[in-house]
Length: 198
Image (cartoon, rainbow, N blue to C red; front, side):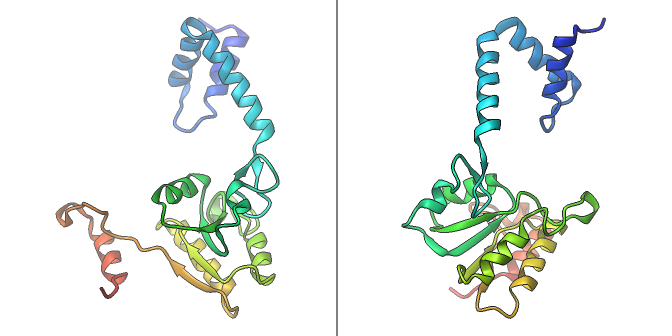
């Protein structure tokens, strides 16, 4: 049995989401059409509003509804300290810690030539302009420990070389409350290399 064009269009639209295949998309479409048309309408309105109203902050590239995001507009934050992260989700995670009071630069990806993600695609030219303008005194690298994350961190380190900007990398290793017996060897090795005096 084939779906009607409108039903098939709805199913196809859901498959654009990460981790949603045709069967999951069909379940979602059927749920909205059978049991929650009001929720479907609300979802459509929210999607339209977000797609039209959310853009990138002109300074840090985080999600924003104006030219600058709320973090960049906050005068109580240290505007010269920049934490470089891969995605807006990373900003949210760091903000939940309550420990960081600087601003961010969101790459919206990581260097990955095989995926067509070069320095310009992740905004490193924009970050370099901010460094050259003298707006930044410290960069904190908070990219992941994947090959792409490490390559991105190394590229930024090379980009900053020869300037007065200090560069640090967030510590990585054993999680709080974790038992060593359950931590993998690579993570433990990284934790030992990153140890500091107490």
